[in-house]
Image (cartoon, rainbow, N blue to C red; front, side, top):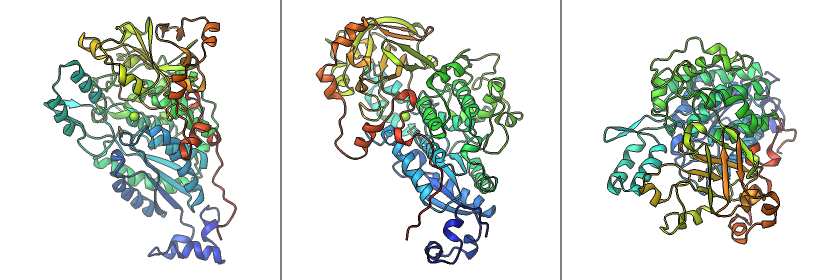
Amino acid sequence: MASHLRSSEWYSGDDRNAYIHRAWMRRGVPDTAFRGRPQIAIANTASDLTPCNAHLDEVAQSVKNGIYEAGGIPLNLPVVSLGETQVRPTAMLWRNMMAMATEEMLRANPIDGVVLLGGCDKTIPALLMAAASVDLPAVVIPGGPMLTGHFRGEALGCGTDVWRLSEEVRAGTLGEALFEKSESSMIRSTGHCNTMGTASTMALVAEALGTIVPGLAGTPAPDSRLLEASHQTGRLAVELVAAERRPSTFLTKASFHNAIVALAAIGGSTNAVVHLLAIAGRLGIDLTIDDFDRIGADVPLLVNLQPAGRYLMDDLYRAGGFLAVLREVKDLLDPTALTITGSPLVDHLDDARIWDADVIAPRTQPLIPAAGISVLRGSLAPGGAIIKPAAASPHLLKHRGRAVVFDSIEDFHARIDDPELDIDEDSVMILRGCGPMGYPGMPEVSNMPLPKKLLEKGVRDMVRICDGRMSGTAYGTVILHVTPEAAAGGPLARVQTGDWISLDVRNRRLDVEVPAAELAARGVNDATVQGFANPQRGWERLYVDHVMQADTGADLDFLVGSSGSRVTRESH
Ligand code: FES
Ligand code: MG
């Protein structure tokens, strides 16, 4: 029996505890299972309430076959799962809980390595946070995007077209009946959203980080190549144990450099910023919000996908896939960053080709020459705020306008379509109380719908500012993740309707034109404070007491870092 295996601390020997650990696991398992064969967990987020991940049980079967074939023992481990469209008030409230629960169950059980099956927005980030903190050999399989649905001859982008069509209804240019009819065409197959939303982004970014076998991310969920790659990944997981390749042995600042380059080149979701910061925090890697601007700002946008562009994820796959994108920006990647295969990311790019230059633009003809996320600071956001210029209106990137302030999303809904609301297209819409502490959970509400009366006039974008997040499928001139959030006493809590706000993305400024002393003297009005959440018990109480601000990834303060995989005490 190989004594170096972690699981042998449970299974080897002839004492009473080893007897107990083995006996209850037998149930048809051969005796060899306990004699030095790597025990590989499959952290499985399949759930009927996470529809984007519901097909992962089939993926898990292919992984199991690969693990068996390589001599390991596969063990299905259902973990907390988060369906972005289903859970209230926001899936982000439980990303850290999912990460914590997964970390603890990986540590508590007799396993030597893990295959992480994710898909829907929060699932891959939470799995990677867990894997980083328990530091066992771990490899991700992204469940893949769904196939493109069509309605009346036109492709439907998940999320993005919901925002677009619902605005058309409010503007009076699309009938309610047709809008309702489009609903059954939106989700064509298994898999996650087919736009460059957070799920697609995190799968590609996780591959750029090195945690997925290169070439796998972006494979559509129903594509048989996903199962083939899952089988191979199962085999790899067994090899990872022998090689002792754990997150701490190959993930470095260089890995995050590559993830940030990829994020910009694909026009990825702003949510990747909080997720990557949180993952880096677990690894003890010094990644800051400013790294996104410094590394990503000048990276060209090459992928023509909604919401920034036109196409959808299966188009990206047929056009050459993610590796073809990375090959175009190879010179911007850090050649030292390794992948889960043991070899550098840059070594996996030579065979990649662009087959449709309308979907993947060559480096010489980028869609936007400099596409990364910009980090803004100023009197309204001393700790930073972000904007994705690629999804914004160029004419609004430098703007000055009067604030129209909403104290909560409910306040916003109650007043936004009031014909008497004093607002025009130059106004700056501000929504507060939506940060990690304030909501709680930092929901995706920052892309506030425009007032109906302005939509009817043809206005399609306005400057919006919020301490919350925005869906990765959304677009517009939206300033997000304002830090400190209003509930933490940030200046956002003191802004009043009528204040002048100035935005200057080129110079990275976001200011409220009120003298500092006057702003400080204002205090925070009662309605605002009462609007912030104050949960009495349970996870929400723990979360509000310990969540950190968006600029460091909105993890819980006591979950930062790693405890490793060691457990020294027996259960009986
Ligand atoms: Fe699951 Fe969009 S709702 S990925
Ligand atoms: Mg989302």
